[in-house]
Image (cartoon, rainbow, N blue to C red):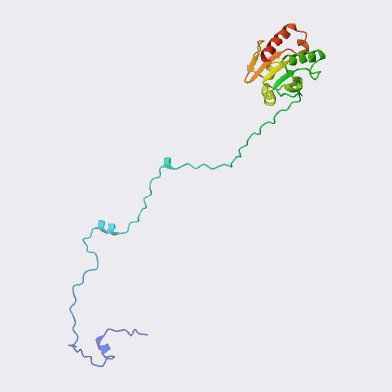
Length: 217
């Protein structure tokens, strides 16, 4: 099929046979066009300005963190309950007498409750010499409580006077020395003497004891 598109003027007249007239309309005023301002950027704009006109990404300024000012946070461990040591139960003693006048008499006999017959007789004379009756003093056989120190005895009996027959200073854990004189320890006056059975036959020790008893009478 041949191409029907043509630009030939003679050929076009075959299709457009009617005459066309141009008539001027006086009622329409056509204003002259003003010089339009160019919408493009003039060529004298430098490449530097063109680059600066582009959008720059804004960079957030992060303040410098001083590591020395940051408080250290340590992980908290489990709370350990405070354990309070329970006080030891007060030691009790089995003794003879009433201890109304706070006079403690220590004896040391593993075979007898107090001493031999000779020793018991001597003890009766001793308590009589200082005007004491059975309700006034407490007799404790230290042989039944070996290892007990002075502090434990004082806590229980609270003695004002203590007569120790056959009990050594070291056994009571006292930092003292016996020099045949009455010892005043805190609020207690203490007299040390041999075991009652042996004391009965020791005249020198017996005379020394009588002298001390007169001072505490």
